[in-house]
Length: 115
Image (tube, rainbow, N blue to C red):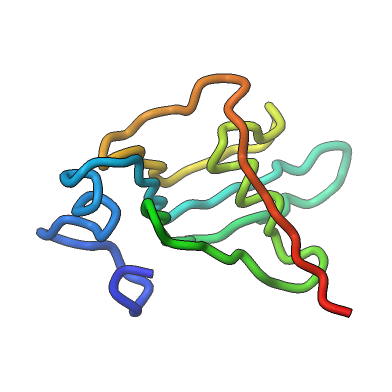
């Protein structure tokens, strides 16, 4: 998301880090990639590739896409709940600091289905 162009926030505070200075928890992800290595003759599969984004207090974040596009994988990656055989690279920052969420952290997902 890096100010709308998909790049990192070089030399400047990310939007999430700016919110962290004023209080509240913010989450930023930079160049997040998740890969499932091939085994038993299966090819390697990229689950997430080079994602950037942030979530700040008082704002709603919508993760949208068709079935199989990686929404749940992104949430699992951000919460540190990817399967052990999935390789993750990139940064997940909590209040601007590289930090792994504790086991048992809950990702709140609310669905609104319009009829």
